[in-house]
Image (cartoon, rainbow, N blue to C red; front, side, top):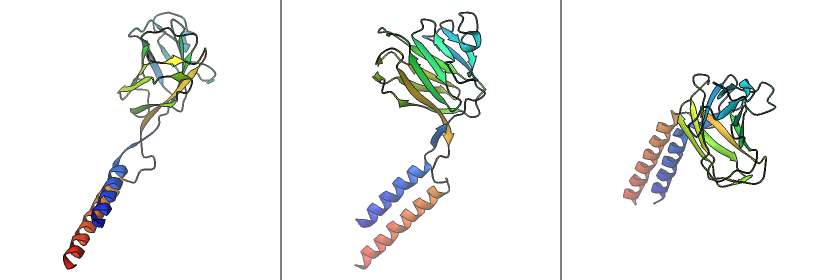
Amino acid sequence: MKTTTILETLVVAALAAGQVHAAPLSLHDATITATYNGSAADVLGLDHLFAQEPGSNTSTLDPTDSGVEFLTADYLFGFDFGADGKLTIYENMPVPTGDYKLTFDFGATLPAAITSFTLLDGSQADGVPGLSVIDGHTIGLDLGGLAWHGDFASITTQIGAAGSGTSVPEPAVPALLLAGACALALGRKRGRRA
């Protein structure tokens, strides 16, 4: 029984060691193209001074980091991307019930593929936003299920890429499995002697 517990512990440790951990993704030189409910025309970018014109759904990061990179054309939401991969979403006025789906495509301007998109702080809204990684350079955001806590409330998310984090290097996984098999064999041998 004791040997089985040791083996189970080693297998769990091996599986945990083999998992890839997400690290913040640098957006430093990113160019972002956005859509709002499927429409490129309904997103206004900083590079176009938030004017509703062709191409206004594309922007680079604000070099002063003092404001948002995108507004929706209905001015309900603002989106502030940080060079560290954080995305803060601002609610600018009361949001009526409806569909509020966005995509942000970084094209080939990222140093690595996007592997995660997670909520860091959603305390200023009730509900959970829909966050998805569409592909290695595009994220999806669904704000339709949120009830915001007043004008200019915000939530913060993190865009991540595969990174080593604090995981055990991959060669340790076979070593841990081998150690577990040895422990099981020793336990069986001791059981036969008794």
